[in-house]
Length: 277
Ligand SMILES: Nc1ncnc2c1ncn2[C@@H]1O[C@H](COP(=O)(O)OP(=O)(O)OP(=O)(O)O)[C@@H](O)[C@H]1O
Image (cartoon, rainbow, N blue to C red; front, side, top):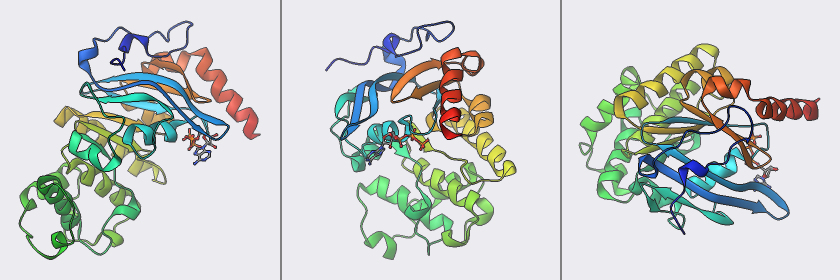
């Protein structure tokens, strides 16, 4: 199948939603005609998008719009029913989820994926070591404590966890556990970082801190970040572009100010609110 045509990204046909032309070579992550069904349910419907190197892209949409399903198909957690995923211009659709970190794609580790009884430093170090050695083995937990240690300390510093290096993961507050999850994703040295609701369950202060952290990570590393996020203040403040899904389809991809003004987006959210009432 051909490489995703970035100018063909699905957008609302009206008003401001037309995405500027992007040279295909500048897209680090490409999705082309991606569809996923669950029985009769069409969760993601022919979605195409191209995320540029260094871009911070948010994917938003009302409940049930297909965000998580799209994310899971990009990350390889779910196989698409149809369509393709490209990373650095190579098709990776058929590569398993466990392969993606080696190819340059990482997803933030969830709380239940942390090594609860290990320290912050050890959690990050284990991922650094695994990334360097190619595979996880229980031996990692028993020996080689110095492998990747310096790199892990640097990453902990990048995400503001230096003071917690010796704390056991299970004893960290929720916000710090999410940071540790981001740190562990960074430990694979990705080109593209996927974040699934990075501020969910956080206090307003922790939400603001996490939003700043995501921006800093992008700025410092030139990393490409794709996130699903429900907090609109976060989305509007940190995104370069926002892709809006509704009923499995992209209805707009544009810069934050234009998305706020977009009639199709307003209608999609109002429709969702009406259904909730
Ligand atoms: N494993 C599954 N089996 C059956 N249907 C599913 C499954 N996962 C998702 N769906 C359906 O696919 C559609 C899209 O769901 P998805 O979770 O991707 O949406 P979302 O935008 O992430 O929603 P939310 O914001 O509520 O998390 C919904 O109709 C959902 O019920």
